[in-house]
Image (tube, rainbow, N blue to C red; front, side):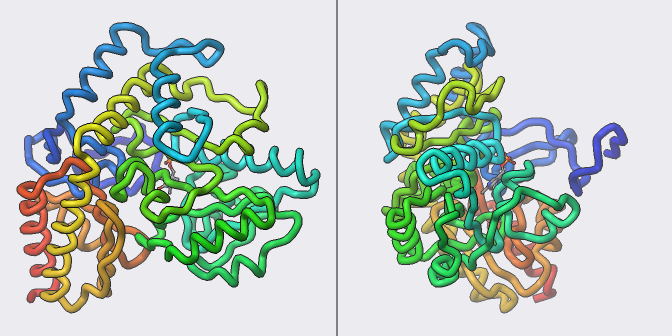
Length: 391
Ligand SMILES: *Cc1c(COP(=O)(O)O)cnc(C)c1O
């Protein structure tokens, strides 16, 4: 389907989706696809969650929106759930991952200006990272291809090497206000942080009164086997950015912070018209309840083992598979051939899967995926890989 009314910002595949069921999507010709992509790690509960659908329908009957000039119960409840199940004390809601990062940047900047002086505004980010497309978030994204057409960007960002603590120490200075990273790099190629690296960053940030900001937009909300990715590592950041899976497909973003930082925002400092509106928050409440109370984290643990087992069988079989890595249901398969070719062939054969970086096939299925659906997906993938290499 060609549509000339849509701006040319995506290299879209030639398929039009119509509806979903459990962990399958169906196109307008009713062709079925196994979903290992989850709408890029968004559709955490798949497509058949009654709890999520009911929450959205009920809220639709009450009101969709009321503005952040007033309180609404769903937003308060969602903030409470996020705060009660984490190291954080306060929440700010917005509508996307990029916006959650923007909020985090502003909070860290204000804290530093107030406590360390007007000259303290620099950020340390990481090569290969991805933080979103708005100017602030893009400034922190350590990939030239995303930045090059839009410079000059925000001033004062320096890039260290991921998992290399010395490269961070070399950049520490009195004018640094925050260190920003994905504890598990997503778009850059599914690269998990080393636990020692995160522990040393934590210490470095405390010692220098620098905000440690984790971008868990992709790896948070149950994706890595606990509610938050940093809980898998046991290393607490000061500020976190969330979005993608948080409302299971309804647009929402959140920035959470510990009291020391959260308290510096005052009325007028930051805002979002739609941020955490009753519809988005109702969906978020349903997702968090399902994840915490309905065995989804256990399923992620079990399915992590199952996916890894299947991926290692493929690695034994195909010599172009070089590495298998990741956490929970955020997994990557490094290949020495083009991952895009695999993604394209898989689509034709009824499997939705993603690439990441230049050489990784990325698996981010709904968190509710079961063995039967996974098996179907891996059977398709095996066939695709066999055809690509003629093995
Ligand atoms: C997707 C993503 C973003 C951007 O989220 P948007 O909702 O597209 O703005 C930011 N950070 C990470 C780690 C992401 O994966």
